Length: 65
Image (cartoon, rainbow, N blue to C red; front, side, top):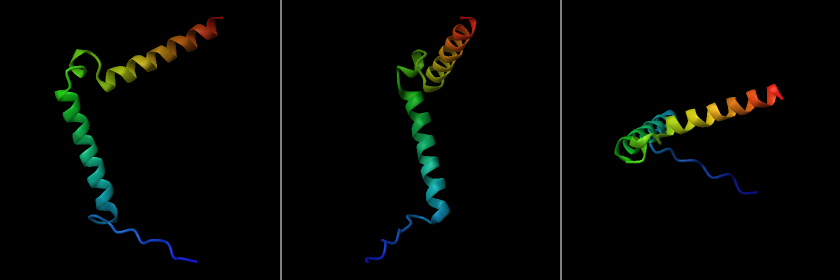
């Protein structure tokens, strides 16, 4: 049986996680800032907020029936 491949870390075990979270967060904020759709009320935060409100409204409608 072959031994499993050893994972080589880019920076270090915890450094890779911190690095990837930092890069992902920076990419998200750069996209939100530069994306013209996000400036017209369609940012990720606003879309999630609208979807959450829609679920709440649907739940309230189902309760009243």
